[in-house]
Image 1 (cartoon, one colour):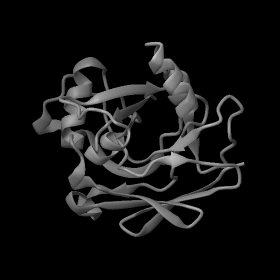
Image 2 (tube, helix red, strand yellow):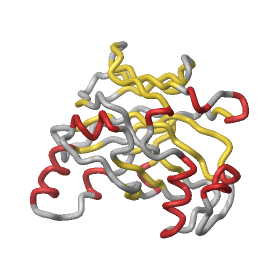
Image 3 (cartoon, rainbow, N blue to C red):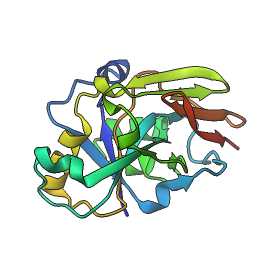
Image 4 (cartoon, rainbow, N blue to C red):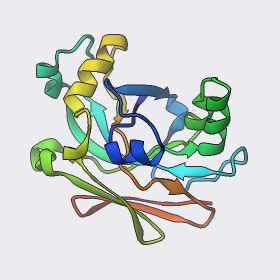
Length: 202
């Protein structure tokens, strides 16, 4: 199982980080050790500026390579929510030196996800909304219609380079509103009003 993350997939998020809008999907990988399923999250000791990025997560149902966009919808049937944790201070240092920044994104437990999965046949995905709350204050609100690249486009593009396998997860990008977390925080997210996860930062 691998975790594929899409960057800059919401225009307002790209703007808040002073990044250009992408002309094609940007993606990076997290190892399977980044996955954290509904357990307490422990703040790592190698960063002083850890940021949350709440995202819709898609689970791949079957193996595929060079998938045509018109067939991409046959490769997934469920979604959930997760957090792409980013050690922003490490990321910035790596960027300044022109170095890879996997250590800022792919560290252990950096990809918490909900234990709940929502079947796409049960929702109107085109009008899906998700919200992220930090200590009961809403920090992010995202709508699937605002994605720069939709899921089918993402699957078609990524599968040109990497074979997708059953159980792979795709984090589809985060909307505007990302920010730092602190020990003691309670992080919660909803999908179409239904609570999907609640994490304690320790």
